[in-house]
Amino acid sequence: MRSRLLYTLLFVMVVGFAAHGQLNDYKYIIVPKKFADFKGVNKHQTSTLVKYYFTQNGFTAVYDDALPLDLATNRCLGLVAELLDESSMFSTTVIISLKDCKNVEVFRSAEGKSKVKEYDQAYKEAIQDAFSSFSGTMNYQYQPKEEVAKEDAPVTISFKDDVKKVVEKPEEKVIEQKSTLEEQVYKSVEPRPSNITKAVEKNVESEPLTSGLLYAQPIEGGFQLVDSTPKVVLKLQETSMDNIFLTQYMGSSAMVFQKEGKWFLEYLENGGKQLKELNIKF
Image (cartoon, rainbow, N blue to C red):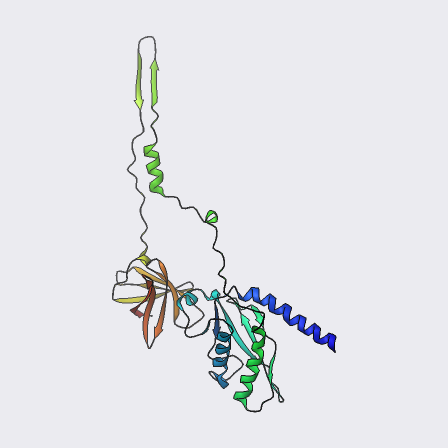
């Protein structure tokens, strides 16, 4: 009996240390307002309790309908929490599962149990018991992944700079010669400067939007918004959530979403969030 208890304790410690390294790669825990195994929104206060205990254990927990901008534009920054209901007639049993943006399970807690008959209190005790897997030796601390080294970054070649280098290079004269007994002549043949210029592609997503009706046209993976010119002013990329799209605006990541029947563009400007109402016709 003692050896079995020791084995269980060692197993929990090993799993805890392994999870420590994995969870540190993620900045957020996304808590659904309604878990799949429960019929109603925040049934038995399950969502409230899960979010609360994650926060108590040092994680940054957010509800799935209130994502910060960096998480909305990059869902791989967070793990989605699932509360699995394994209850029976005799006890309330839950497991907490964490999945990444590819729906791969990264961590699964031990079972949390309660034999209390009253549901709200039983789920509270079971969830609290399951969260023992996140306390103690885990010591979670978000560690952003290292950026790609500069030497590995793609090299951008400027056509304009290349033309300048060619013009500034010392010119080598090519001599055309004619030599006979009767005459000797030569003519200098020099390269003529070129007036060819490269057309600059206009990036409409780096220009400020003007007010007016925008028409949504379906494209692969989302929509493009076209004004009356017609000109494409924004390209919207679909997300896993309804009426929330990712885009690029003024050279930065942004988000387009619907709220109370109106469409809005949320973007960063001078370090602060800006909100702009859009008139979109789908």
